[in-house]
Image (cartoon, rainbow, N blue to C red):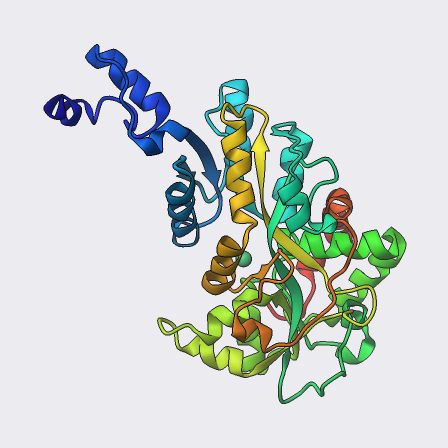
Length: 362
Ligand code: FE
């Protein structure tokens, strides 16, 4: 049996899973004899999130529940894959970053609603879809990195300030078409309306020090180099730079800058999420829900905070000490589903004002 098992290993699905065990038993003509773990079955996951972050969580989940997790890591194309596979998709759940991607999956009809008291308890309403189509698991704030030397504390305090005439030639930002900025601009539309958002974005364009380019960390570099005084970026990149022993120059970029939580004293700082959802095609619905519930509990929430410097979505779980050192802030309380509805308008606005063609230098 053991010899057969090893011979068959490359030909059959994972024998630790229920499906694999049944198939293996069928092939070998013996009754299924799954080990205790496989009795709980499996769950199939498509993940945009990186293996270094997710693997330890999935391992802990399997250890705790006996449910095996089969995961496909994909930096892009998950939605296209789900659409192409339709009802035959093997995916039971997806893990992704950015409300934009979750919203696109809702619009494409590839998700199914989930009612879970655990998820409703662990995740504040603003961070989950009203009908349970997706659930936020971590929170990241889209903040300002400002020059420690050239920007006095309190001098720049709101997204609206980015359009202030005295900031002419001092603002840096990555492409307006990037998901992170689309969501930020969508949040301005959701809060202020399209006309005010247009006026504001025109003001931001007029203040750009250079054509929008690079990633979030590249904006910190511009401050270090003296090209910009204020930049827009996500919180966790600051921690990633501060702790980056592989690229120590990033520590200097971080050291030149300070985090400001825009609008924290008003409507709240714009935040985004990473999240999870159960697919419409799911065959292992209960296991998929259990996995997402596990990811919303203390163990997983702590690991997200420690490994990726994101804010835990579950109240009462502390952020990483480095993240905590930046201080507390108030998050915009608009439901992210409402923000997501303005993403298409935000994208059009970026084109309309020509944000990516602003800035004197390139
Ligand atoms: Fe990121």
